[in-house]
Amino acid sequence: MPSRTSKMNKDPLSEGRRSVAESLRNPSSIDKVVVSKNLINSSPINELLGTAKKYNIPIEFKNDVELDKISHTGKHQGILAYLVSEGYFSEKKLWDTLVGSKSNCKILILDGIQDPHNLGAISRSALAFGVDYIVIPKKRSAGITSGSIRASSGAIHNLNIIRVSNISNFINKLKKFDFWIVGLKSGSGKSIKEHKFSKRVGIVIGSEHDGISKKVESQIDIFTEITIEKDKIESLNASVAASIVMFELFNSD
Image 1: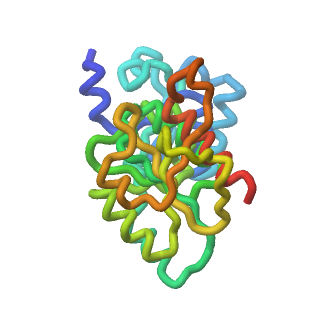
Image 2: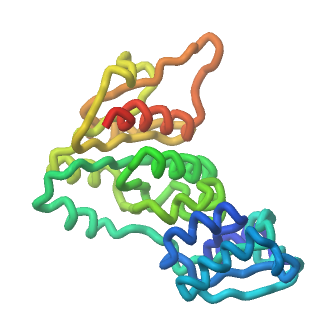
Image 3: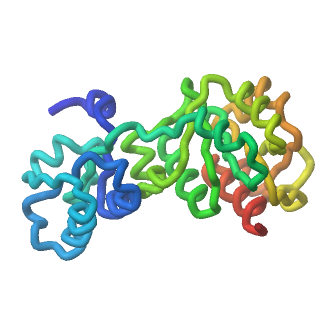
């Protein structure tokens, strides 16, 4: 059987019923759906297959042993979907959209989130809170993989995720389009509850271990922190912190 590493280098997959259902909301992201022969008469599976047929997505039936070999996570639940591509949004398209526009825009900038499960969880929250774009660096960052897709329950496919070469340069350019840049940093002294933005804002979340890099810090307009009982808990998981920030800043729109 191929090693986990060799599997993870293959085409991204959406695995499991909930993840595939979420991916089907963006049918252009799916190349084909593969289903266990043992689930041909399953009502939940047939509902998903009905959606796939509606969009002319090819369907293949395989035995469970074959599905186990294809799966990256081992948690396919009898159904998985091959993705057409990595599904990243073009940075150029973002700039083209912003030129001549004054509309509101919410951008989440992840400065080195390396755990695919954190990226997936953050993506799911971002979709719930109406984030328009997620920006990640091309190096030293988690990306769109089977692990992050599954952790997001497929929400990643319904988000505009952009990979950039340099986060600092991206932020510098973003400011030319009237964006306020907010950085989450413990010890900054200002509670997240003190800030409300209704127009154009970019939120920077640092890496799980090192936080926001020094170069990116120099580009931030406002630092804020989440008030917690530090005598009881030292810090919050990156995905939890990101969710709280998005709720506080965007939920009042």
